[in-house]
Length: 453
Image 1: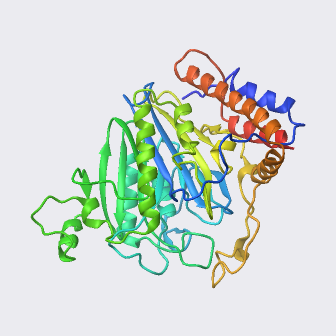
Image 2: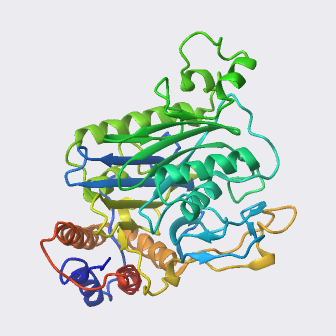
């Protein structure tokens, strides 16, 4: 498949940022940066035709994490592995497979796994924290974020990635400390898995799971169970386990959400209902016209709390992907690599065999001295900020001190982002020709840093 090079739009973004690089500062959202009592959760979205304006599947996710946690964007090429090799995940080792696919991941810098990402087969996955009647087991296991990365590295479709995750879940379980802190914080996971043709919602409770296939329209998930009686696939022991626990009588309709939701859910899950409802309403408003730009606007929405900044948590990274149904066209994955999409710009990544590594959005490595590798874990802090994160932090500080100037200039950045999106849309519809696009992510990251400096 030949990748395409834009002559305007994204190229204009690069050149304009170069011209403006002397300005110190970024934009400022016209809404308050921090909102009180906003529900704390992540949000994943998908639009499949006819929900999308074009013949594209659109995926989006905000990762809401501890506010001082750095999220990096890392590309790992496909690789072959020797028989009998093992793989070190965040906390445990598991057998490696013979071949892993190329992936691009938006991930907390301290862990092996990822909040969200894509592979070179056009598969995207994001996860959400949930709590169920099944207890969160103590001890080390696979994090939900590990399962995201494993699904992407080993799956060539959404369904294939789902079977990878459920198989590993049954073998190794899920659990372990989910934030870079000695205070215990663990959870189970839901996943949204998407490819060019369909989407799957996967919800888990310990080693048990249930899945629902989505083939058209719009769908979102948050920090709660959403699958009711419309089950497409499930763990073979799911209903027997529910009946043995006395959660289901074995005769009435089996409704997974009703059976497995906790009797006294954490406040985080209750508050997430507001965000889930807000996300559903935003998708319905745009049903039939969803584009990458629309998805970005949803991820930037402050009133719903989807763009979150509350207490100790905030949106630390965002991702939007365009997956054309036409397999001859490239999938395009946009990442912020910086916190708060309302004051960040989305930068496009396309898989290529010849792309330049983008090290300025990859965090420093600390090897055996990393607090996650020492016992007991997380007794100290290290500076995980990558170059773009540092530059963006400084720009945010500047724009808060100079809001009028910051708002004006950030408006220009957003307009250039919009031009970039328009040109990518034209490229995917065959309206404009071009050349190789593989280094576009490198170019936009590099010039964004220069702009802030």
